[in-house]
Image 1 (cartoon, helix red, strand yellow):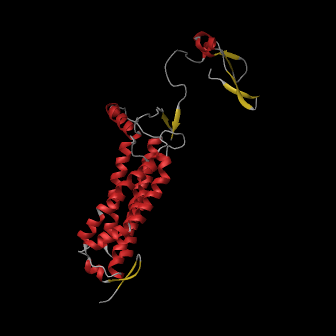
Image 2 (cartoon, one colour):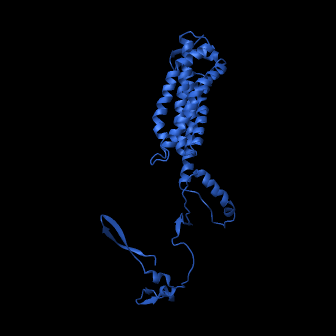
Image 3 (cartoon, rainbow, N blue to C red):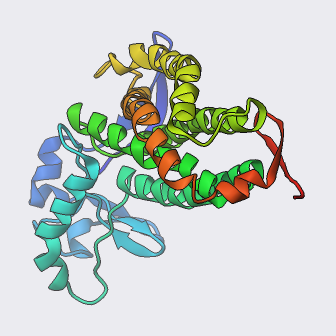
Length: 305
């Protein structure tokens, strides 16, 4: 009835299964099916109708099992919408059905959605670990919680541009976008280190006072390095950001758009917001900064009065 592969046929370097089954007229005729002969263990034959009740009914052609339980798989492809949005709508519509299912029946959502959720959870945990490691590294460098937090203030500034880029390009937050956010955080905080480190250099080595003129001078002298860092990453990723919809760019395109969008806002904030933050909050930690002895750009040690 269902057929059986009995051999293989080689045709133009292609291996094709030789599939044998009853003709359609026998498979669709109940009387013909009932007359099918069965070989008996003791010898001889008997019609199938003598040992089985044959009738028409609906049901699956194949019963799949997982963990000794029957499983029915319903598949769909997502188009022009985010995967998470589609799954949430499916869950909302199936909520009444799920509540009325008999005991032993349940609904699971798997496939790419399950893989994405698992990857997102892993990235979230690693992101928290990375932020802690970043803070400890900055604290070791500046010996100041104040300055370390000021450097990390670049992260929300970059996040604004990244979210704007995702919205503007009509994308949804995906695993590739999360990877881009992590890379963006490293670039944004590096620019902050360059600027704050130069502020401290001007005070410690060149005798500048904690004044607005010092902040303006430090910003002007660090304008070229910060812009060069941002432009190098932005220009390098521009071809990928313009490759929307091209085959093979499904992962690289979200990464590129997130990084470019975040670099735009973080670079602007580097010279508009960060000087204001330093002027407002760094003076509160001035005594701590005055107690540090400057060694070289980015290297500090505790000193004595």
